[in-house]
Length: 345
Ligand code: Q9C
Ligand code: ZN
Image: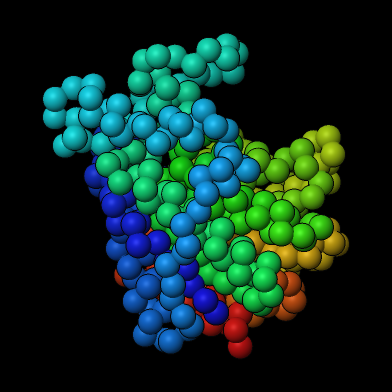
């Protein structure tokens, strides 16, 4: 299978994230993608290419223009705010809550950081915009390749994307690569598209983007949001709204879930994808379900990921894989390549 690799991802290298009252080294590091690239080359899993340049207007098929403008200029604004800011990353520290319903976009930079985000674990750095944009280009290139007849393609995106909404970043994500791929498949002629999210965390951004639409079915298996990040979305009773009612499926699972229960949920999700009449599939491929993941709570073993790939292949759909989470840095390449290799067998 072809891989589209983001040559600018390493420019997004956050230093610190807020965690339990202190700033700790970022979990989402460039070595994650380098590990995947290394393993794909080692196994000869297919060609690895840079994506063609994209028209920036394509990002607006999923994201709000005012959010994109903010992201594009945010680093320069941050650096201009105070001497020394180029030596530290920008993190939000205040947010509007439910009763703040004004649509006024504040002039203050910190206020806009909060308006367009939902956590303090997602540093915005000098290379964030270029990396996120090039990652989105990978997702679009993979979708276009599948639209043009390929059985499957892999977008090795970094930063990840599934927590990013139409107008917010968070959970290490800025642009929603999977949503952009799904939208590109729709625009390329697929009547219905499914996004299947197997990352440990619920893809709150992807769900929100497609929640009121019938043409993109979102299914996710993830740590129960009662206890697991991103907490405020991902419950089983979220089934879609308006035209999208019945087109969203959440399968929350308790911390400690192993492969037997996890793979049964995967089979349920794949059944729902078939019943939804999807003509193409986008897989949000996080491998933070691994039992050695430092920030997650499922118990999948490395060999299980081969079976995951086989199960995904049995859906028989043209498939775009989009890289998401996975923080056991030394193992992420092996786990990801196992899924892709299992799919190809
Ligand atoms: N510092 C993805 O997997 N923080 N995002 C959890 C550990 C947020 C995960 C606490 C985790 C975000 C794409
Ligand atoms: Zn995750």
